[in-house]
Each structure stands twice: as C-alpha cells, then as structure tokens.
Length: 336
Image 1: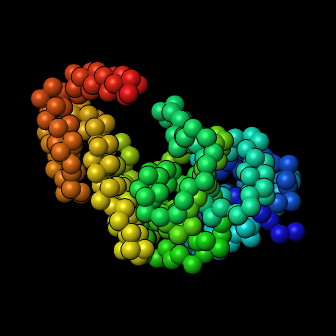
Image 2: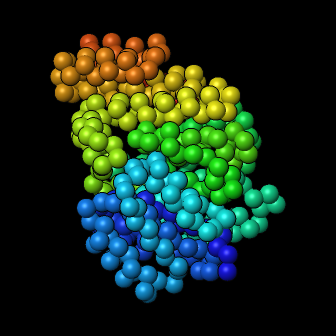
Image 3: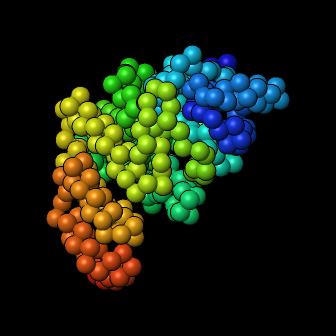
C-alpha cells in the first residue's frame, strides 16, 4: 500500500535520542505511515543500525534504515531522505525531538479532507530548553503563495522538525550548493511557500527536546569549524546565521524574490538577546561580538540602539529597561 506520510529522521551519533524519536511515532493509520532513518556515517553507525533493526522487528510501521557511505552533512542528508521517501508527504524530524501522541492522525485527517492538498504544512512546537511555545498562530489557516508570505513566515522554517512537504513540490530542489550552510530546509520552505503557498495546522505537534550532542562543525564533510562545534560560545549563533543569510539570498536569486531585505531588518530587531548574552562575558567580548555581527549583516538603527543601551547600562539594567518599554508598548497596543 502506498504511504501517505514518510517520517524522515536525520541521524548522527545520538542513539538513545533516536530511539526515543522513533518510539514517539504514534498513529492509528499504520498502513499510511513509514519511518525512514538516514544515518550520516557517524562513529556509532553500527550501534545505531543495530538499535533501529531491533526496533523494526516489533514496530507496526515499516522502518527503513539507510547509512550513508560517506558523511553528507546536514543539508545533503535532508536531500537523501527525500529520495528515500515513498510517501506523498515528507515529515522531517531531528533525532533529538519527538512527536506528540495523536497528532499524526490529525495531520493525516487534515491532508485527506483537503480539497487541494497543501504543498507545505507546519504546526506549533514546544521548545523545551526555554519552555516556550514557538511557531504559534491563533488558528489553522491557508497561506497564499508569494513574496509577502515568505517574509511573514520565514522564521518558522528555522527548526526543521515538523516541517511537512509534499514530495513532488521539493524533489527537484538540489542540496549540493547548500553543503555546510545548515539551512537547506529554509530554502525548501521559502521556495514551496513562494510557488504554492502553505497551510498552518494549529496542533501542537513537536516537542523540540534538543538535548542531543551537537555534531555541527565537527563532521567529516564540514572539516573543522570550532565556532559551529562549540554551542556554548557567544559567537556560535553568528557563525550559524552566516549560513542562514546565504540561504535566504540564494532563494531570492533563484526565485526572483525580495525576502532578504525584510529578513535582515527583522534579524536586526532580534539581536537584543544575543547582545545581552555577550555583555555578560565582559565589555571586550561584547565589542568583539558586535564587530562580528556587523561583519555578518547590515544592522538596523534598532540594533545600534540595543548596542549603546547594553554597552552603557550593562545586561541586567538594560534588560529591566527593555522589559518596561515592552510593557508600555503592549499596553498602548491593547488600547488601540
């Protein structure tokens, strides 16, 4: 029987987390779901394969295990999963995230009841490290194709877990030029949104546990990049975001779109927390962080205002001032 949904899981080193992820797949539509794991030639590949094979023996779902003969890296492994999937829809998952019980049934019901099957579906997720609900809107709704939708929803593509693509809408996209940029899913998301539109399903679908060991910057395909590998470094996010900037710019060029200028302004407006974190490491580290940030992207006047506020007042006092400003803004908006 042809599958409707392929749960496509990237795998590297995380044995226990992957087992948890696979076990979280829960649907009454057993014949419509398959699970695909693509292991990217990690040092634990044999142990991972043994675990998956053992799980497959007793799983009601068809589980396909692939191990890459060479390390492809994150972006090209997403493409590999795409080619392995037999389902009409590809449901991407990171091996250290899980799917909430029962929501796969709601997703399948949504797809099968739709008059025109969406090319892209996404839902809210719980970001466990900060106990925060992300990618959340008021209600389920269709999203029209085009540039403005891409601008509005681009940040919803950052976490690839829970991004669901109709396979025929992405199978022609090439991952090769995205090697080591670590955001191929953003390109897929924007391209599909731009061409076909999307559907937001207001069901909490993913728990982004995000407790697995970081493999970025240390895998064979990427060589050595200490800033990617050390997620505790205050400069790590800037290094990751360099890849994100390139991906959005690639999209604009390839689709003749104009998302990056608006994206860059919004990114500038979101620099506050990173600047605060850097300031807590001392003024020298703060100024080095600021210099790297300016080198990476053109910053808005709001980002410069953040810089001077935090530089003069320090992280704690500026955070208090900033919180009071937000309260006033929220109050004024509520009265309008």
